[in-house]
Length: 401
Image (cartoon, rainbow, N blue to C red; front, side, top):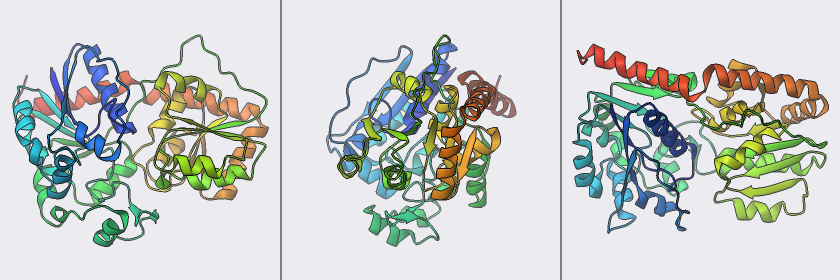
């Protein structure tokens, strides 16, 4: 079959888990003999990231359409403001007119807005809810660029957050566009519930997966000192600041911080005197495996309700438990698997750290549980089976064979 992935960001022009998933899904489909094309917007990446990313080798079997306009940042800005593809319209219409069997929309905020959902001509159309963008202009309920959202005051929040208000959100555009989608994939029960409560139809749960694979012969190496791990973007909503503040008071534990973001320079300077805290910047996936394996646990401190928690599943793949803040779909991964701890405040976080640091047997049991949970639920093979089952069900319902 022929698949088309439509997403704002795609490696190497990306900084988050959504693009990582889109590439992993595309690779998995190609490995099974399918054809895949990807549409994404380079101008959107440059809007927030000035340096050009390091080039990466192209994936055989994946045709990537990297859209860019001579008007630069105006292209994604027009999409953000109007909810339509705007300057990218002709290029996107031409690609989407090709005879695809499946079109899967992902993060469409800056590549076409909701309106592009109606442009699919494929027999099967999916939309994967990587973020809460259909429900929130900030994508993840981070209010006034300073705190989790307690109640909707969206226009004021946009202004306070430096986001131009999106007046199309007060029209019927979302409802009309979503009507063209066969299934909206939610990565967690939490995310599905929030979108169903908002009145969106045909929402189905399809957990994400991790393509990260430790070598079969690899053995985790852990030193004498407890070493905890943060992997993610260094922005306030991810909870990195309170996490660092906790570890600044816990010199007996090491914290490795992997990732980049707008706060990196400020945080490196602020916590430079704390020798138990190390900033490693962005690492390729191949280097993440030993980091996960050598960690006592991954800490996922997000202050906002994540739709899933891909780094948690990556840790599980490496036999590493997780300590997760009690919010959103990410906590579901621990509740469902028992492979870690869920905490609500600093006291509970410190208790979880202490238990894992003091009891190596507990660490090994939770690590084994994490690895088993990964093998049972979050491998590429299992995900692809569920994904293609949805394709077949929709094709059968439309009399397509």
